[in-house]
Image: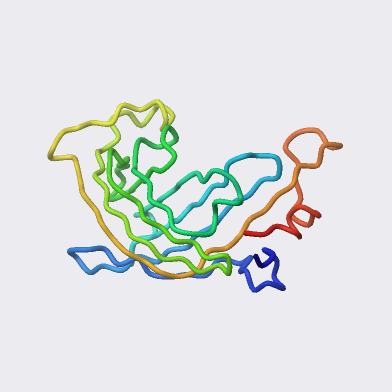
Length: 184
C-alpha cells in the first residue's frame, strides 16, 4: 500500500469536481475529504457541494468508516438521520434545511486519492431550527419532502491529525510520525 504522503501522490489539498444530479442534469461543485485522527477508531469522509449561482445552497454527504484499514475500496451505506447514523446527508435550499431519512450511498475510495460514487436519498425538512441537528424532529410532510440522486467522480484530500498530549485542550498536529507514515 502506498503511504498517504505527498510523495505517494495523495492530494493533501482539496480539488473541485462535479456532482451531476439525476433528473435535472444540474452539476454541483464539490470537494471531498478523508479525516483521520490518531487514536480515534473511526475515519470520517465528508463530501460538500454547492449549487451553481448560489453558494448558500449546499449538499453535505458524510459517513463514518471503521478504521484506516477500511478507507480504500468500495463502500455501500444506508442513509439515516444526521449524526445518529454512520452515513447521512443534509441539504440546504432557499434558507431551509433538509435531513436524510433514507437512501443509499455507494462510494469507492482509491488509495491514490481518486473516488467515484453515487447516492440517492429522501430528505425531509428539519422542523425545529433551534435545537441541535442530532436532536431535531424531522417532519414527514409530503409537501416538504424532497428526493435527490446523483453521481460523481473526482479526488479526495486527506486531513490527518495527531493529538499533542503535553498541551491542554484539543491540540493536534499534522506533521507527526503517524500522519507521515499513514497507509491505506
